[in-house]
Length: 258
Image (cartoon, rainbow, N blue to C red; front, side):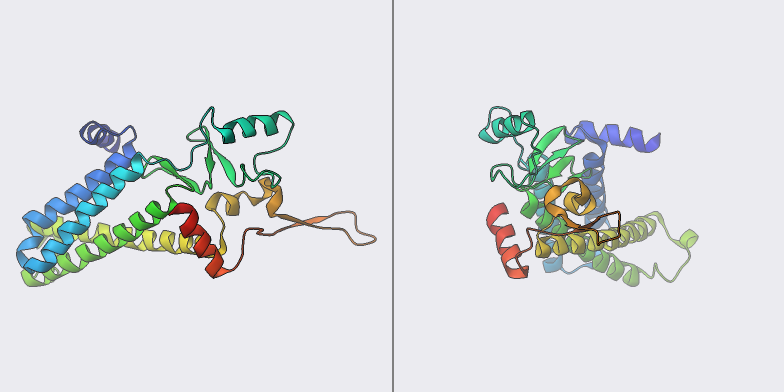
């Protein structure tokens, strides 16, 4: 109940329509406040300026991706008309026969078709698709960099204040806030690092998260191995038709999403 109430409060303050993005903002602002009022006193002036710039850019980036167009196929567009025509004739949107509909996938959360759909990101309350994938990767790198910077700064403050040498109960409120936010940032860096590495893999091999998970839904990823004489079954293997080598895949990613 506390988390739900906090989410509603954050939504009203930030002006977004989902609890998860509001909590992302709340966490950023809270950690920034701990840094400004507590940690900053033990950090060199130049490093403090750099950290404040990192947080500011990160907040601006989150605001941008909240309202960004991931590649929505809107009603009345040529893609939408083509989509209606192909579905009317029983042809799926992922069929390779139409260049306009190449890699257009359906998002159940948004109830819309998205070009280059990777996944629906609850943290940002938006889909990640063809048009905002680069921004999404920049934000992931920004979160990792900013949180790593905070861990280093808070560790330096803790060592200078000898917080880490005492027990939790011996630590005052300021020290408790620093230690707790530092541990939270550490956990964030761990899972975000894994997530960032996964998306680098997807970029290098030119595949989307949705395609990797649900490849059996999309015929272009299915390689059918015919049964041998005497066998009564066929095997379906995974095949990525969009993989053109690391360099070409990265080049295509930057050119399409840039």
